[in-house]
Image (tube, each protein chain N blue to C red):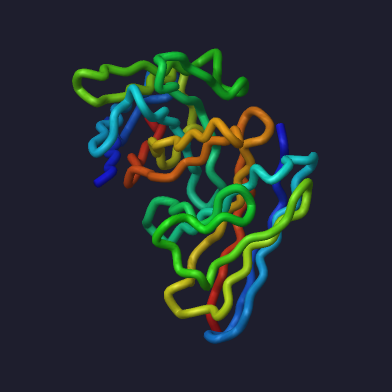
Length: 106
Length: 122
């Protein structure tokens, strides 16, 4: 299975720019998606196909990357962005998720 | 409005079978696929399997021997059955709507239910 590796946690101040990374153990082309999960809630799709913003998601969120290295950028970060962010690939079967990056605001 | 809702027992005995139902609204099961995804507390999600819009199924090979997914389109429901449960099957179980694009080919889980918490314990 394709393993997706994410840094466990980040802490930033509101108004700053934050980049969350995801590295795949093998190429996933651009079939990488990003989800936001707030405590006690289900995941919510933010970005699909590496860089496409899901409808209704603020333009503060953006994504980039291809192959094995991907990033999710939030600029500027707001207090409401406190959450865990997961990457997920759908190029190889089975689809797999990263372990998540917990974003905390200072 | 797209909605998915999981239902089922919160507590299952070890070695027994888990049965969950996903009831959907706002879309047709013959137009969209539905996946089951589980998430142990504090860990990343794990894709379990999918009911394709055409009635076919796909399973994670790690769970395939224990897992069965079916549906009743007349009731807008997708079912999950997994046998031989153990304590490491404890977690939250979600059903998701899978949005499929043919060109380019991809699918993405664009809507999630609120989740059903399942504890495996005697």
